Image 1 (cartoon, one colour):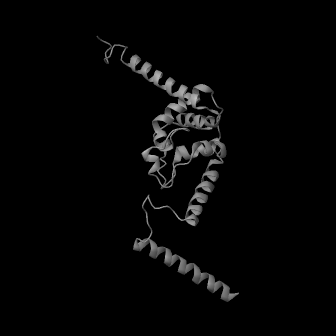
Image 2: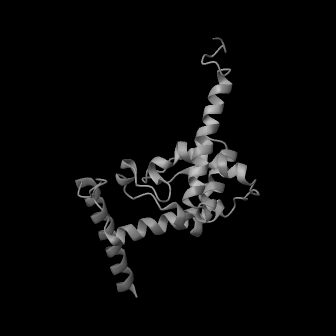
Length: 190
């Protein structure tokens, strides 16, 4: 028994020394273009998924407020998320292509993650992935709007996305006219 414990302690010490040597010699490649080996990727993905699940357990999901909330979520998604996640049926942006790990496919996220988990990720971000913590700059209500849109994505068609995009454009034009009095300057003059 004493031999087993001694061997285990030596193995752990050697693993720690090896890890420190890799870190301090710069042997670990931090380039985004370098793809993680499968065992490392498994460790990182598993740690991320388990961490999010654990922290999202205590989140109380508010009732969905309907189409207006989804429309608001789409607007925020267009402003905050589309550069990295795109919309279904659209090409990946240069930003999305340049991230490692690659941003998740949100149709899959919508089907496999709970609303609380999605909210937690949007609010808190995920270290070393490019996912920012939007809770620092946005209200919970705005973040729940995005969650509502993401959860609605699997049931949406391309024409639904076009409708939302056209509606957003119309509302944007309307907001511009309202803020300028419809006359082209801030005072509403001619």
